[in-house]
Image (cartoon, rainbow, N blue to C red; front, side, top):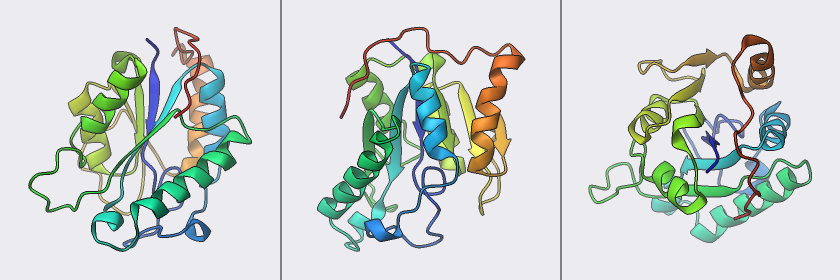
Amino acid sequence: MRPAFFFDRDGVVNRSPGAGYVLRWKDFHFNEGIIETLALLRSRGFALVLVTSQQGVGKGLMTQATLDEIHALMQGELARHGAAFDAIYACTCLADDAHCTCRKPSPEMILRAAAEHDLDLTKSWLVGDHDRDIQMAHHAGVPHTIRIRGDEPLQVTADRVLDNVRDLLPFIMSFKNSGINLDASSKAKTRRP
């Protein structure tokens, strides 16, 4: 088993589209510092898992094929830098879908990733920009959370709150000097999705 870093997508991996959705690749823009952060975590042996709500599909604003294409292009760019995700989990249900079991703050996406990729959740982290991201981590038993400050008020406590994604890499690098061990205990082979 190895620990993972779970990442929300919009507002963390890429610039937030605000109240709308990233509906095509040309509207997807990586946040400054995220590629370097992902590459560092991968080099330290962590699994990288994207957990994202994409109800634009459920609303019919984009197709599942378009979402898959955006993620494939994202993965291609990240792979060029040694920073690709090991797995991507996307909930495309509508917020008001009473039958949905995967929408945040449900832990389902994290629990599926743990089962499918042999992840140690007790040593894992989540980075998100909404309360629902932090709640999802808590519900799944992920003990370490980092909140990127966004437009939403902070009502759920995260271990650390950062002003923006640019602060993530220096924060993680500072662990070396703080006594926090941020090297994954197992250097298991990375599995690609």
